[in-house]
Image (cartoon, rainbow, N blue to C red; front, top):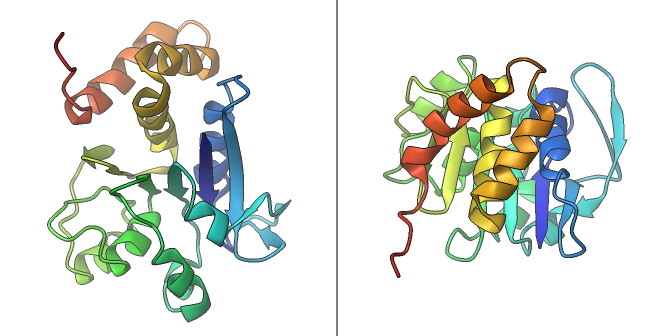
Length: 205
């Protein structure tokens, strides 16, 4: 199971790295989480340099993808070298999630046609201009596509992905680990309140 977090130049550390940390609470041999970048190294909006763990081409073959956010997303969606590769993303065979301005990437790829999205307040006008309804809430998912708005909503995307791929117990364990001491139950309850309406209905025996 490969989950790729698309991370571009000027990336927001909270968007890519919180998701990376929560997703890596799953400790099984068949579980791999990578930072997928268009270049061997990318530098964050605050100067944090990270190295490529997987390519964009590999991300297009992953089981799940999170499109991260950053200050240069508008430049990324105008880069044919990036967008031509990302046209290989396919929600019919992948779970695809976007954090904040990552929703603009999905919009420009045509993956949000008829699907509303969550994004950050700065990105909202650009996503609206791309023809997508933006919701005033932190998380939304429809079938295999999810979006989250606000840096600290990134754990909602991670929990949604873990639930879809490994089940709710695994997601609860991951959230419990990262939640603040003394607030773990409250933290988990809020997460499930936002995520549960958008999970597939359980299959009855």
